[in-house]
Length: 480
Ligand code: ADP
Ligand code: MG
Image (cartoon, rainbow, N blue to C red; front, side, top):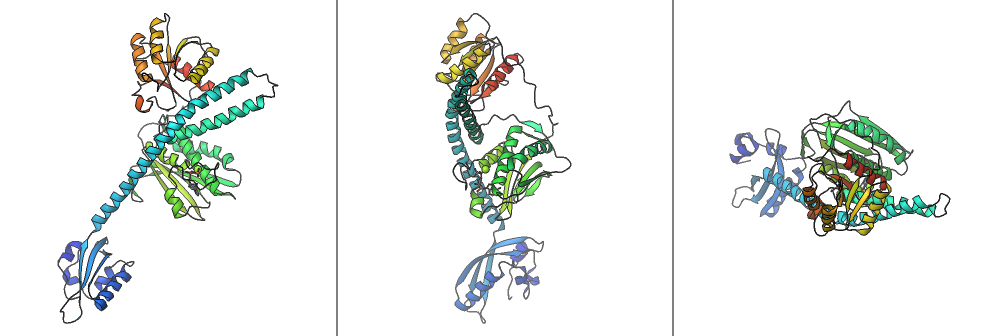
C-alpha cells in the first residue's frame, strides 16, 4: 500500500496511516474477497480497467458498498494497481426501496383492476342468485313434504347457496366488502375459530392454538378475520394431505423494523403448517389473484389474495415464509388500537314480520318481484316501483305513512342514494334500506356517499336476512 487517500476517513472512518499491510483485505466483506482478489490479479496480468462493486466494513461495524474501478497504473516502477471507490451504500438502498415501491404499486394496481373486474361479475351474478335462491325457496315452501321433487329443489338451494358464498368471496376480494370494524381481542377470535378449524382440517392434522397471555386490542371486521383464518387453514390442510401440525399463534409486535418493513405496534397472527412448502416460483406468486397450483375445482387462487386485501384494508401487514418439504408460515399483523374491546357482538335478532308500508324500488324485475313476495308474505304492505321516477310519483300520491324505503343502489335515472335524498324531502321520517350487489351502499362510481346510519343488505340475500334487515331498519331510531 503506497498511497491511501484521506477520503478513506470520511467513508470508513480510518486514518490513511492506519491502512497498512493486509488491513484492507480484512475489511472486505468475506463474500467479496474472492472477486476483489480476482480483479486485482486480472488487472495485474492483463492490464486495463476493472469495474466492480464490493462491501467494506467501517470502524463502526457498518458495511459500505463501494462502486470501484481498478486500474493497472502505467509507468510505475513496480506493477501497481490504483483502486478508486465511491461509497454507493445510500444510493443502492434508495434504489432498492424505489424498486420495492414500484413492485408494490404494480401489485396494488393489478389487484385493483382484477378486483374491479371480479366485483363487477359478482354483482351481476349476485342478482341472478338472489332470484334463484328466492324462487327455489318459495317452491320448496309450496311443495308437499312427500313430493319427490323436494330433492331437486333442495339441490338447487344448496348449490345456489354455495354459488352465493363464492360470490361473497369474489366481492370480498374486490375489497368492497361490507366491513364493520369493531375492537376485538384476537385471542378470543383465534380460540373460537380454532375450535371450528379442527373438524374442517380433519383428524389427521393436529391443531394447536398458542396465545401469549394477552394481546392488545385491534380493530377489524370479525367475519373478515375469520375468513382470513379459514383461508389460511384451508391452504395448510391442502399442504398436509398425510397429516401434520397446524399452529396458530397470536403475539404483540412492538413498533420497529421487521424484515425490512417499518411497522407500528401491532398484533400478529401467524398460521404455520408442517406441509409441503412452496418453491421460490410459487412463493413469488402465491398472493396473486387467481394463482393456484391446485386442480380445477380444488383451488380458486383467491385465498391468499383475499387475505392480502383484507389485511391491507385493515391497515395491517402480511408476511409469507416457506421451505419446500418443511412447511409454511403466513403471518399478518393488525395495528394496535387504544379503545376497549367490544364483547357483546351479537344483538338478539328481533321478530321478522310486520304490517308497515314499504316502498320498494328495484329495476331488476326478478329481484323486485322476489322481494315483494317475501315482504308481502311476512305481512308488509308493499308499494312497488321499477324506476326511481315511479317511486317519486308513488311517494307523492300515497296518502298514508311510508316508514321505509327499500331501494337498489345502482339504477337508471338516478342512484338509490339520490332517490332517498329526494324522497326524504317529502317524507323526512322515512328510513332507508339499500340492497346492493356491492357490499357498501355507495354502489361504485354511480353511487355517492350514503347517509350515516343508512341500512343495508347485500345481494345475494336469503329470506331471513332480508326480513331481519327490514325489521331492523323499521325499528331503528328515527332519522336525525
Ligand atoms: P388456492 O388455495 O385456491 O390455490 P391461494 O391463494 O389460497 O389459492 O393459494 C395460492 C397457492 O399458493 C396455492 O395453490 C399453493 O400453491 C400455494 N400455497 C398457499 N398456501 C400454502 C401452504 N400453506 N403450503 C403450501 N403451499 C401453499
Ligand atoms: Mg387457498
